Length: 303
Image (cartoon, helix red, strand yellow):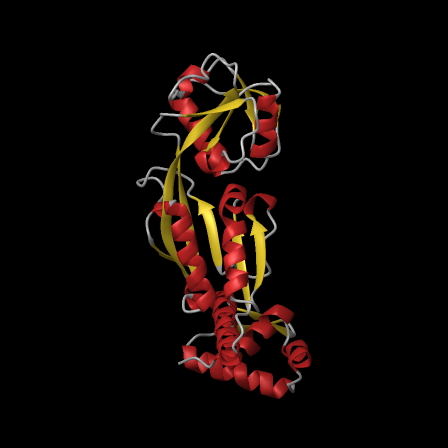
């Protein structure tokens, strides 16, 4: 079994590009660093570094080992943090990434439950639309599958990937929001084709998968939406609808807190559906707060 400490030393060598610089960073002697690297090469049976001029450079195998070592060390750090939290009776920090409609619809109540049940828990929440990833990987992530068709997107099925367990939480349709005086306002449902000549309000400046699902479904009906205005989010787009600017199409979960003067109508196109997925870091599955969070998310998705 490979010694994790030697992985840490080797990673420092690759990052600094030098035995001496790695030794300075780690507080070791250059001889000690060289011994750790040599021992790691023996353990793996791989040539991890090679001489280049007066210095050294990682081999292709060395680059691959250093890259994987980063993931292994991150998981060990997660485990150490979990063990320390459990020994001390703390809940630690829970890092969550989600998209905006799930954040607005589900997370306030879920966060309130978590901080009530785990008083020492610190929540770090990031929105995928803002493009600002956590330092490291999230413990739990909610995301929308890139395709609603299982044969075109492997992520829609439960499974595992890159240290995470993947679970399908919910499949939901889309709705169109129209002014209350609109000719379609009394309909029980509409097709996207019936909206082809309407002025549309775009509602996703990030051009994410939810928008792509709508555009793809419209293309199947032989048209592209005629966007009149770009809104930064669902809430603003709905406000534009209330003002009579046009109509907007969004996932059902995003149609919360409707203002006066608008009507929400289900879209009946089979292609206008999205699948909401949950990724849970495998090394954090046994963390009590993670277990509770995933339970709450499943309950919210079913509701």
